Image (tube, rainbow over all chains, first blue to last red; front, side):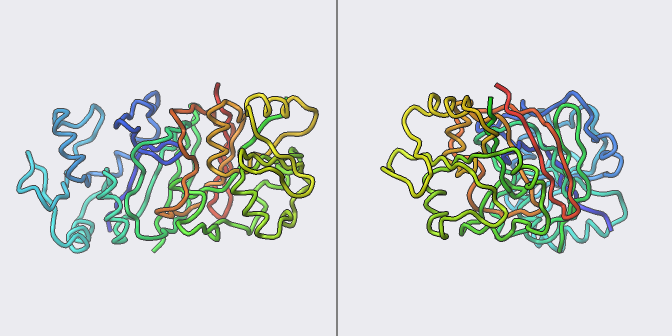
Length: 173
Length: 173
């Protein structure tokens, strides 16, 4: 079965954006394993807000991104641009259906609301956090409204010369 | 000069206590480097709330703790129990004075308010976070009211079989 993998950059104090939405603190000087990561995925899960944000920035993937089948999660949108696929309704059923289709793994891109929803439904398999050596003090937290504890199993911890540490976990169900 | 070292356990989503003050999620199956850490310190900085909490739990150090000179930070207390030392007034002056005294390094024990104050005044030298493989979803965050970004330099990242990762940083000033 295809795996849903949350992979994103986070400050040491657990924020994915600064208080004004900044992500200029994210290192771009190294690949940080993304080339390998892109080889294992062929689809992306993205929430409505993140989708609208990418549209407002031009709607096309950043340089270096592979061609990905994009699933946009929203109960309010009626349609999505291009060849994206709109996802709503019973998420457990729909996501498990996608996971059971042939294909590579799926990148859970965010945002926090979608991420928390899918974690709550035990639909996320792995998580890799690129922990940056900075405290932001405030901003957007990694998760929103997790209803309780979630136990994880460490898969690997990789250190980079910049001080970034990539922590990879499996979700325990 | 003696170093002030913040060392504490944190969940992967950046909480030091659960929403009800729980710390039952902290691993106790291994030493996690604490024996070595205790060898390098001979004093502890503790905020008023944490001091009162330790008093309410009996007031003596947990088993395995070394004998530490205890500095209690409070502007409201008039006296502290036993041979503890009450600290108030101009923190930059007082803390630098303590750091310039002969002795080993100093454990900044917390809580969050004292920690954030000392970080804001550039009085903290190092930080080691025992990152536990769990999401708490809610609770007491690692820091309170940092006024802005704080840049760090990764010193080491040590992985334990339990999945705990000890991340050690130096504060960049």
